Length: 96
Image (cartoon, rainbow, N blue to C red):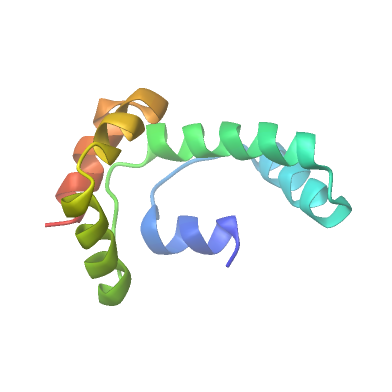
């Protein structure tokens, strides 16, 4: 599954730079790990900061994710530090 499928399925209203997306896909194809990492982080930040909601269309994935965060609730602290409290709030709302 690629980043575009994830964006479509979970973060349908997110906005990312088309140039960043193009460079990211090129780095995947060329196995350029440094660029993959840099652009992956940039795209993740863009998605997390631009999405207005997190949607789980696959109930199995949603259920599995809920079990993980119930067992390890500090995951939300890590996510908050990485991409911000607003994203965590949207994620928690999406898990209800």
